Image (cartoon, rainbow, N blue to C red; front, top):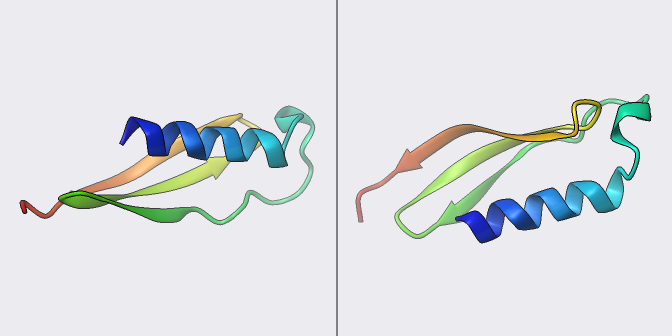
Length: 60
């Protein structure tokens, strides 16, 4: 899961190099499927953050 999170952060940096100067709306978040569950994330460009807003454990 850490590798997926690192990948999301690198992608956000590549698209929004100067996050605090960003004037547009934040990109749509998404879902990432991982073994045994999934997590939902939201990118906040001006805050230079990627937030995990939901973690779902399916137990298998």
